[in-house]
Length: 416
Image 1 (tube, one colour):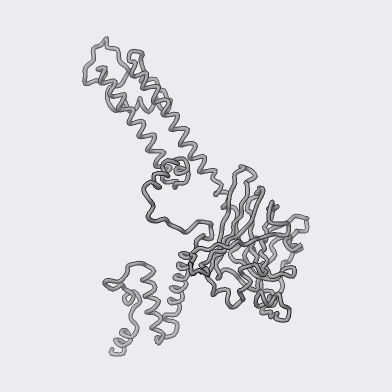
Image 2 (spheres, one colour):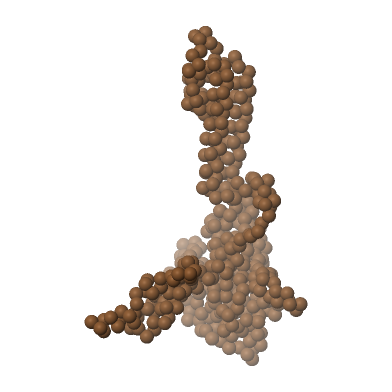
């Protein structure tokens, strides 16, 4: 019994031990960090009891840390927030109301859509009710039999609302109709018809604009999960693969990149987000790409490249973010779109190259195997860019084991 109690004291349960203390932070990340620290202190326990949990917690914290430090996420969203914005600048968003309406979320668009129609129907129903009351048309006013109404069959607020709805949507059931007795009612009918047409045009335009946003076309452009550094045609290159998932082309495609990092100028000024241009090319150039099949973007690491000072053992210790842009015009809609993604040092593999994904069948058709789109294979690569440009210092740390692609004749179009 005593041994069991000692065991319980020595190895407390994880949820109880990881419970937050009074006065501590309540964020999930801080809670998991405390759990990871506690699990690290229990290494003296039975083998296999805590390491698996500790590994998962560390991986989760690392993923959250990487996500927080990115300026551009893998799917192209900008991870930035604006603080202390002046009220006048917020008002400027309302002045540019069209762009604001197009960019807001779908849930708010649908809410505004419903509220605009329902609100206008109810507002005009009150006006129709007021006109009917002013003319003595309501049932509780007991109009005489020879009384001429402004609108036939409006007896209360409910019938006024139904008439407002029928007027603005041009349903026209025939049960309620406007007479020529009241000039104010005729004016109100004209105003409601015009305002209803304006609401219809504006909201339908917003919905069509949101459906046809160029960023939806950008979702069909995908980048590889990893970037690689390997030799190509007597040059050390950084390579990224990109593919168009639609058969329609992007016209006038252009590719370029930006390296974001923190630098200190000779004057002592710290630039948090210093941008360095990164040139990317394919074999046919960098402008007007023939984007009918997946392409491999190549950045030559020469003496002007910021990657020239890096090596295989120092790359993952660097702190930078490589943002890649692809601009083009959709062939079917003629709308311009931009595709963005980013790579951090942990997502760049030194000494690897992409597997071929383009092959030709026996029938003469070209086939793209997207199962190998982001897969890489080790290749013989210099230890650093300086070593690559000085043949005496070459040091290869990988060997290429070869690639199998049975049943197809492998053709890597980017290497032809």
